[in-house]
Length: 553
Ligand SMILES: Nc1nc2c(c(=O)[nH]1)N[C@H]1C(S)=C(S)[C@@H](COP(=O)(O)O)O[C@H]1N2
Ligand SMILES: [Mo]
Image (cartoon, rainbow, N blue to C red; front, side, top):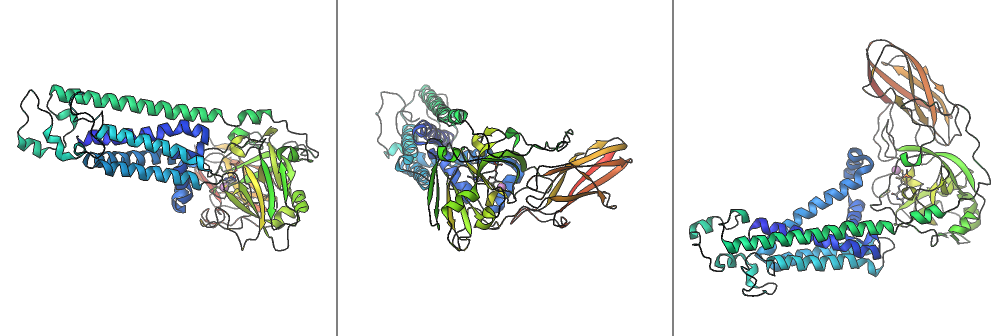
């Protein structure tokens, strides 16, 4: 078998393995599909600098990049396994078995996994192995010259070893001189002499590849689509949100300056940034959802979704921000959230003394650690069910998530939350802490220039410079702008909803021709001004002044 054919056989076997696993995963859940399960392991294991790189380069599309990267790597390994299998069939089969085992292990070690989650990898691995065998030593093997010949060699039979290849069945035309055969033992199939038997074998091989790859694709994409149909979007549409007992105060007139390119005061749900470690969005059925408040509490509580909806709800504008947001970045959004104050639930559960951390745990096992004191200090920390008047979008945590004003998302904003566990910071590190991020994550004061854009070309004359600034739960007192390192000039702040939301600002600039540098800085209500010093996002949020260069003509 030529090296090219062997590699193609390996890739086809891998495609069959991954493809047929998908329809099985329709029954066992999308996270048990081998590609997703192993991808999840990679997400959790990727060294932090690399993940930073991925977030920076691919933005919120880092998951697609990860899956594509994983697939390319898998294809390369599969090609290698095919070549190995052509030499020693058992080596290739052992390789497939190892990958199947990896898939099983990955599926079984995910949060909330059960024994059935092993099935997609087992079925996929099994059929992948049969495929490899069929190409190397079975009915599709290239050195079986006619269907009537020798029959089907058993796995591991001599036909799998390259030494067997030269002694192929006699052919009508003279065989190539041994010297040539010896010089080029692994020539691609297409280079071989056009003997009828060879021709026939190549056709059979290619037909096999086409048929199996096609089946794998249909099974893979079909299964994936079917699994999507089993999601919770229908259940989400059926949710009737209660009216808030305390609605959000109406937005003050002028909170939204409605300037082109300026972020709107309320971020529409479909434009709201999304950050999480989930390779497939968790589908949590509100009918079976439960929230457990447990750990170091005197009175553990368990709530159903209906229990939660029956409680008085409040509605608040809160600006959520990601610790990975670079200076000037857009991993921030402002929404009107509807939910139950976490404080009230904690009061009922009665945390023990010293239980200074509340660990929010998601269905997918992700955790965040929030100071108990922050959740009880009177701010509007919510178990949210509504976002801008709709049930939470599935990617934003349906049916229930945490929203805590003033803290970065990674320490507070648990999506698809199912547990609040009272513990202490000394006793438990949440997901991002052992990965190098600070256990405490108060949001740093920041400001951003939205218009004009960096490298913009403008006409001389009056120009409105505008953007947003935020210092959640402290509030923004002042925003200043300067041009070309000149004196700081105070911008006009638009009215805003509360200290928990960002604020829009604007400043009239009489722009003269030339290259100019615009800079912005904000001061919070406590009088603290953003430091000039640039710090990276890790471990607890970036600092520095957003700086934009423009050309005025
Ligand atoms: N279950 C779960 N919740 C999570 C995360 C996650 O990875 N998994 N990421 C957090 C982070 S880092 C941020 S910034 C916010 C983002 O919320 P959003 O995607 O709704 O904007 O969710 C938080 N909640
Ligand atoms: Mo984040």
